[in-house]
Image 1 (cartoon, one colour):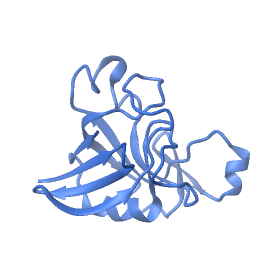
Image 2 (cartoon, rainbow, N blue to C red):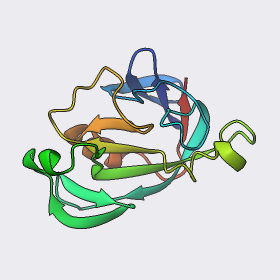
Image 3 (cartoon, rainbow, N blue to C red):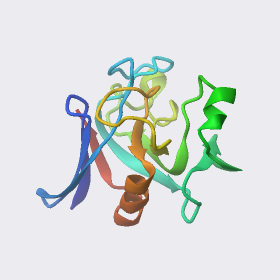
Image 4 (cartoon, one colour):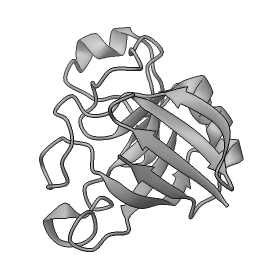
Length: 158
């Protein structure tokens, strides 16, 4: 069985198949640490699954807003225009919590918080926290991962 494990302490995601290590990626989780509450801008912990994969065949650096491509291709000068924006680029894995009361339903619902694994500008440093709750990846890495994993794959964030 294929699954993803995300280590917040290591800022790393590992892909496992039947408990065997396949590969790993440097990531970036929330600047504000861990937490499950809506509006916290923190990365939720626990068991999740990938509810949807979004962006198949979109060009690298495609800009997404509300899970829809805007038609724009990200360029660093866009950051000057929108300095507070947490850029969601290239591909999206929309996460849904599996643990009622911890990361599912009510004020702790990961899916309703719009927590994703997503691509980000190439100059964003991986290996250190910096997002507004999501798990960021480099674009080349998320494209590779997008082809490897199915909707429904389990994701452990610890």
